[in-house]
Image 1 (cartoon, rainbow, N blue to C red):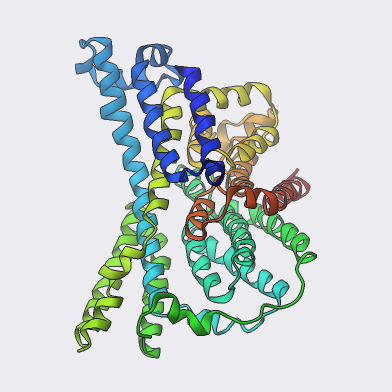
Image 2: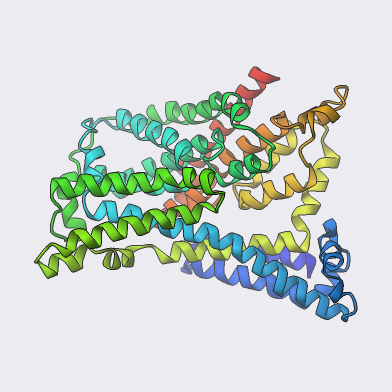
Length: 470
């Protein structure tokens, strides 16, 4: 069953990648994969957990002495069903509720024409200039918000600016690259950097100066390459007809500004909320959504046009949220968590540790692997295998030991590679999956048009880091 789980995982990802060829929605394949892997793990719990790769099952039993007298099968059931699945479901729920809150806030702002405040200021219709503007706005916004929220916001903007589907896909692909690159150099720009930051593996003063230029280069290289292929201008902006998209009565100028300020403020407040309260980010996102919801209810209560009120209330807007994308996240993360529980990711991390003495090769491989496997469990496995070393305990004669010190090369490269490596395939990052769901981008189209650009940027950033810090 241990090997069968790997085979099923590969087949499941192939079905996701080839959804348009096999005519099966990727969400259905992801949900099936997520449940099937846990079923296989439960059916052969004795054979898989009997080896206790990583020692997690033994630690669980030791911390619950009341289970020691139970038969082995009941111990496995308690560990898998009551501990691992429920524990991982809590972590997954944080991501899902964060995504739901962000998508709803963006949809509210979009419905009220709030993004006109930005789109009306983007006057250029030149394809190359627009590409650079969109990419740099995404890059810096991602560092402040996070790559997932930023990608959702930028897709909403692209729908106002670009009409043609494949033209918009090209810019959406660059949004994915820019969002992941921008999130890699900020401690709050990506889930993985947040993990490293909270555990003390990296610090704000350490990660920003060391990864900013590498991340910037990883964006500029694809931008330069793509700029040579784009010519001419777009015919017209969709902004003038944005109301037709949703068929709602236009909001007043004052309402648009208020909704935009509250919506963007809610997104920007999320990392501040986390720092102030130490509560999960999704709670800050839901708090912002609730404030925006209350404001719109009060605002519309004064309106006498019942039909207009019903069309633009949050209760109506929330129906436009892309539920299949959320379920896709659920299935993929459940599948990866099953592999983590079974020990596949731990074995991979141990192999990397035995095979390489420099921090560059294992992190490069982790980055490439993160284009297929979610980077969160990969980073979690790396953190579990290599706890951050205190500077006082580092043997300066050992290059590999010094790499594991807080803000050392291993952790900086891990943040960069896991963040930007996910751009190589559209299913390799939260931003990619979100954009894929929102724009219905075909996996093979992205592979043909964006993946090589992302790969060039990925290695260009690593080379930049090597030249700067050796």
